[in-house]
Image (spheres, rainbow, N blue to C red):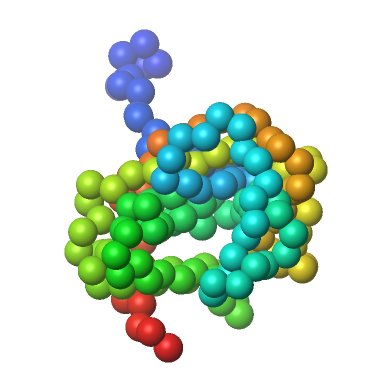
Length: 158
């Protein structure tokens, strides 16, 4: 029988840590390929068009931030095609082009853990929260392809 003194501590993955923080309900998450000390409002784009006023875009869903931290145009400057969203049943879905999925192993990024205070749901979305104020992260967690959500589908240009 193992006692607390001789039990090996189980190492927690970055994804497990982020999921634990998500369950607390006090945080939103921002995924990025680069290290940022202070997050500043920037113009968001959706399908190449300006999307709302300049702001910090974050999500209460850790897996979305992990996906955005690893799969992005900096890590994949050519042929970057990906998508994510919420299904009718409330589950998340993720897709990336075959080229991305074949070349993802060495990619990494950062998830910024931000206090939910000051962020509001954007247009009623359960997935997208925004703030127009400069924000310092509570914590920065490095993530890799190993932390990505399971079952990322192949993106098909629709």
